[in-house]
Amino acid sequence: MTTTPVLTPAPAAAAPLARTVRGSGPGLLLAHGAGGSAHDNWGPLLDDLAAHRTVIAPDYPGSGDSPDEPGTPHSLDELADRLVAAADEAGRPGFDLAGYSLGAAVAVRIATRHPGRVRSLLLLAGVAGGSQRLRLLAGQAVALTGHPALWADHSLATAFGRTWVDALPPEQFAGLRAALAATPVPAGFRWQFELAARADVRAELARITVPTLVVSTTEDGLVTPEQHRALAQGIPGARLAELSAGHLPMVERLPELRDLMVGFLTGADASRPAVSRTAAA
Image 1 (tube, rainbow, N blue to C red):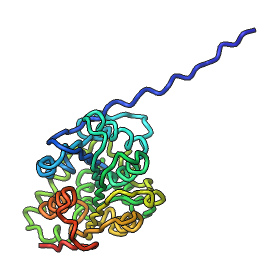
Image 2: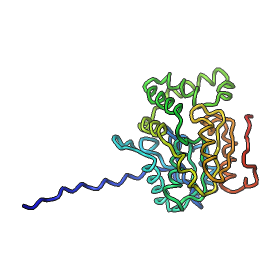
Image 3: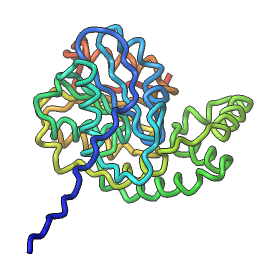
Image 4: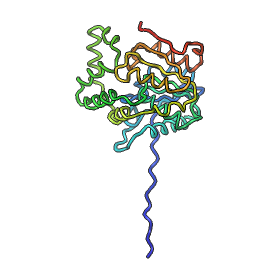
């Protein structure tokens, strides 16, 4: 009797991620944060970065213009591979790499999973891993997505710096609170926050050998400065710069953030001290 083997079909290749490609010259790959998108997190910086690089800014599944993928078990490895594929599709096999929040953990995974592809690394307000507090806050964020007013208050209390929030005039504070409550939650919000809560790249940091700048947001109530310092301390030769801001420096400290990023990319800040501070205005 002949038995016909049952063949398991190979998994389908992941669909290309939607992405913004802008500028010319060497590649710069951008990894956004949980619950954000390429435009939400990097939009205010794209023109300045594109003046020096070909910027490739993909959207994770369920963010921006990338459709959601229900049932897909997303991971750092998967996101790392798909972002590198986006750089390949843009004709930039080698690239500088910047990651924000969850995107910093994705960027670390790219640098260790695809060695030789990354020229330099910039990690902004980044997740290193091992924070029980972050796991609690991520769970709260997911639970509050069906309650817009409570979600807005949670965001104001954790994502923005206390100094910046307290300095807002009452009418601006009320307007921001209303705008946050009215902002739709992206389809990928849940899995992205759950991945941020469990991501842990601390064990692989010592394998990174490219020039690295870690930007710590010192009033960050979501991904705290201890996480940022863990990244800087774990990567050999990494420089640490501090911004007096909450988790959204592209809102609170855009000019200073732009100068740090462009200066690092162009090498203009090579003579700065190992730890620099950008104070609140």
